[in-house]
Length: 140
Image (cartoon, rainbow, N blue to C red; front, side, top):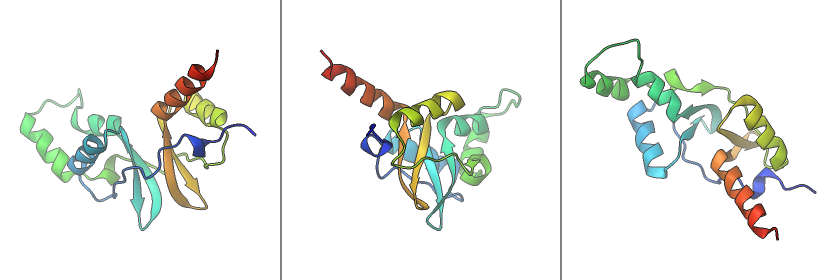
């Protein structure tokens, strides 16, 4: 049987609620040293927010503004307004190679792992690189 996502995924990912502010999201990403947060409402995955989504919201090259405006955006704009809704998900039993191909083909840095409607983890580029390093280090 090929190795499956369950073997490499990050369990217990940092989560965010859709009505939390972007500042809360940024702080959570910083605290947990991650670049994406599954967005959960009433126990269900409804979206994903990446650090890129946050940067897009605060650093538009088309809008000139004072730095204090960024603080207003971070405090008043919600995760719901910036998240990717209904993200692509995978299951914990998916072969690692299939998850890696999906991420490569769609240029996605991480995928929420959902089993029977419940978020059980997330698999990221870092998880895949760590797996590759372990495999390569065990080869002669």
